[in-house]
Amino acid sequence: MRIGIDVTPLLLRSAGVKSYTYYWLASLRREAGVRDAILTLPVSGPFGDLNHERSMAGLFRTLVGLGVMHGLNVSRLPWTLPGLDVFHASTQWRNAPRRARLTTTIHDMTCWRMPELHAKANVAALRWAGEHIAKRADGIIAISESTRRDAIEILHLDPRRITVIYPGVPEPFFEVTAADVHAVRSKYGLKRPYVLSVGTVEPRKNIPGLLTAWAALSATTREQYELVVAGPIGWADPTTVAKVREMSAGVRYLGYVGEADLPAITAGATVLAYPSLYEGFGLPVAQAMAAGTAVLTSNVSSLPEIAGGAALLVDPHSNAEIRDGLECLLTSPALRERLGGAGRVQARQFRWETAARASLDWFRSLVG
Image (cartoon, rainbow, N blue to C red; front, top):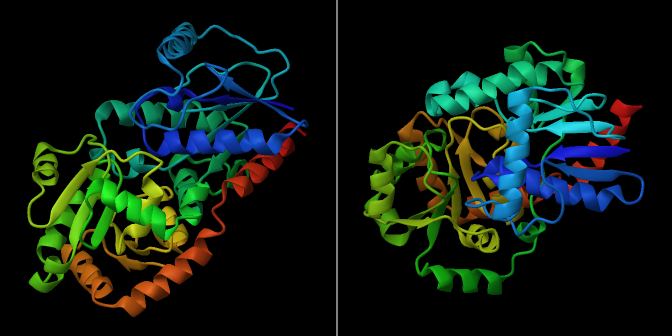
């Protein structure tokens, strides 16, 4: 079987979808062996280390690949790739090859549920993909049951065409040592115990709510801990960006943290705070659980499903609940230990080798 994977997200500045594409592709290649061929479009060949801020294919290959994709998208001319059995499209591709089964992954339905949280161009692009890729696809992967339900409800898809395959957590999150934590804390000057917030600084992540809740914590708690925000600046409003960057009242902004350091920074945190307004999966939650870090997250969308009872859930629209949840975790070592242990168990189901094997079996069932 010959499977074509659209790797356009690897050529762009991106976060969650880029991570998914990178690790899923690598795992598919490892698990495929000699039975199946994994091809990549619009560029082939090796990719560099995962970096959310730049292309992983080099300047020349990136320009050529994006040019080829743009040309096919604009022309809409029929095209084929001989022997290709499946083409797995991203939301960037508009003109899929003929004579191959068309598949795609739906990561979340935020642009339908909460369009006000996204740039208009992003909303338009994702909705186009929903109408013209998802609705005509032979099969769809949803990254959680919550996302599957939302996609069926909003796009009126046949439930039989959508399969839930959870993404994985990179292996380093399961293997962090005390020495790793010590080294990364020294590198970033993290001398005090800290609460960690990970993710692109954009409206959906509810950074303003977290900052407000943090400022409302008891003085004693804020004297003991600092809030560390890690992630690139996205499309957040200027007021939020300014508050994050000014690093006042015990708040530190680290900016983008590379993949090599992220496991140890996560494992070194006292608590991961992730009060997102909506998630299709919530990778930072799964990563923190794999590292044994206690998690505070939201009681909406996919987050209760992914946490599986191994996190403290709060209403993300209530700053008071976020504050009370943080106060509870930061003043209760026993609760943190219990959640950290339960999280490690829960995270075991989120392994990339499991996702790759399930995906290959699913592709084979589509091809028949």
